[in-house]
Picture (cartoon, rainbow, N blue to C red):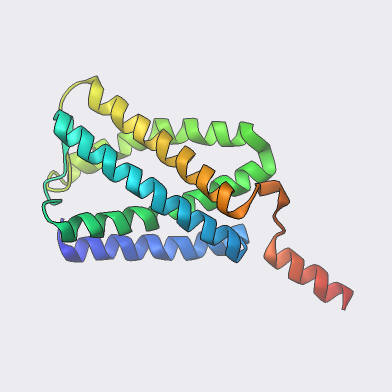
Length: 176
């Protein structure tokens, strides 16, 4: 992966974050919580990447310098943050059951997505054969959602206690 590709992907995920923030009507506190969740889950993801590389289950050939580790961390944090705004809305609407279904969907969709990326761009990631890399990837997705959502909840509070910003402004305008 080149520097330009990394910056492009991070920029696209940043744009997605702005769009998701708008459509979920997240408060600044909720966005801050989601960013904290993204930062924590990104740190966990780097640890999983390092562990699985040491075990020989996969490797990321481009992550060879401190610069790339930092760029990967920032890119992961930004790309994970919108997920927590979505999980917040799911938890607000459907409770823990909606969150559990979402975790299951991510666990099923995430690894094939990564394997497709690895097949398409072997300079980005290479998986070892066998079931262990697949299960580790699946576990990483589950942990990323659970850790990030939990930290967002700690920072911003339970989903059902949030007020929705645009709706609040409309109610205030109708009263005034």
